Length: 162
Image (tube, rainbow, N blue to C red; front, side):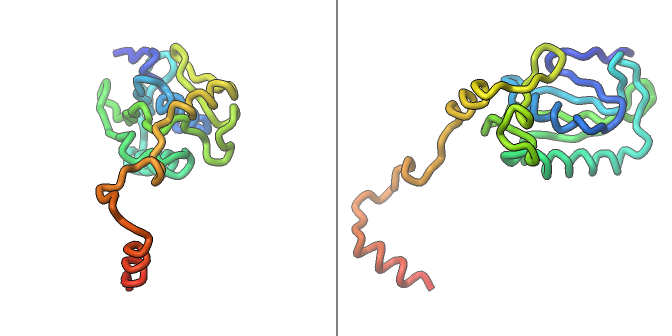
């Protein structure tokens, strides 16, 4: 069985240095996507030797090397294809775009998006536009259920919090 790359599927023979870039591209893509580790670019299934270790490495790399937090946006599962174990990384479209490499920051060197069957660096304008569309969750924008509070009441509440 051949597993062909598309706008939603990326194949990786091994867990290599650009893995996080591919994850970021799917997080920033409107539909998310799937990365198969253990499948060559041409779709040939080669499998993974140590699936437990590789799964752990994948989870750690996504969690530690990508900002903002990706918790709840990806899943890592083992699948058997052609009698070989491969790892399927399912990535949702992120809610706090743009996502980026922690060590490169929110720059064209750290932000990627999926274009066709490959990842591309984002431009400054794309990054700024994506960031501007982000839903803002600041305290000043959240309505208080009790609008009638006074500063004296707040002072009393704060003083008695111990």
